Length: 299
Image (cartoon, rainbow, N blue to C red; front, side):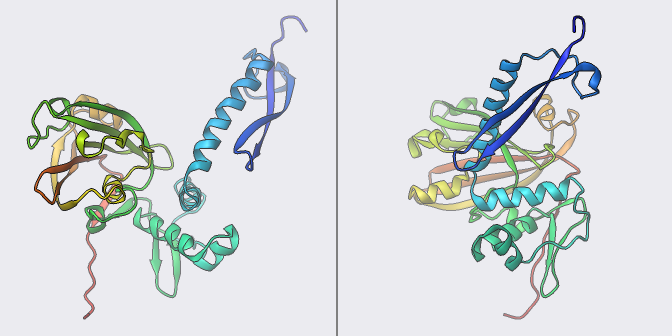
């Protein structure tokens, strides 16, 4: 009818075998129907094209992630959304294996990484339970250079990835000549609710890993990459110090400038004593609680 706008209602279906989404149905709904979004005046063909492309993009990103990561992300989202409140019991390893058709190692890794992220607590003979709302992080694990997964569990957003002179990187790397070409990687870490958790700055000499930026930077763990490429790393040293956020970092972490935060710095050296990596992590305050837990049992 003239003067009355329409809204598009779109039904989409996923085809896991093809790794894509497609628009299965498109319908015109009267604006007076009460459907949310009425009055947009969306073009049917444009809506179908945009939705198909966007959903295929996000579905492709999801399906390209390792299976254990997709399963862990599903449970993490349910915990952080409040669907699973503190104290809720999670499935056992055997139950996860049956539910998802996965092996024992994958089921173990899912529960282990949820515990590492501070989202669940595991008790021998009792099971795995949703932890309190504050994210707990074992500091000994957090600073462990032999960690095979990400230093901070969660989604990475690559903010910057380029080859630049060492003089231009943040934070400065005094061990490198200012003209030395380096890979400079800036990533932001999110939780399941898309709250920024941390900023990560990584600097690696270009000559040491010339093809580094061709990797999947959203999931890259530098030390694991070095081992896979047989780079002879020998020593890693960690520093923990408080710093005040500047305006740029504060904006990325959704904080006020000047807020004190914890910064972890890691320097990694080769067997010949040359610097292999300089990394720094800025932690958003109030979202993580660090602890140290050690066994007192006699070995």
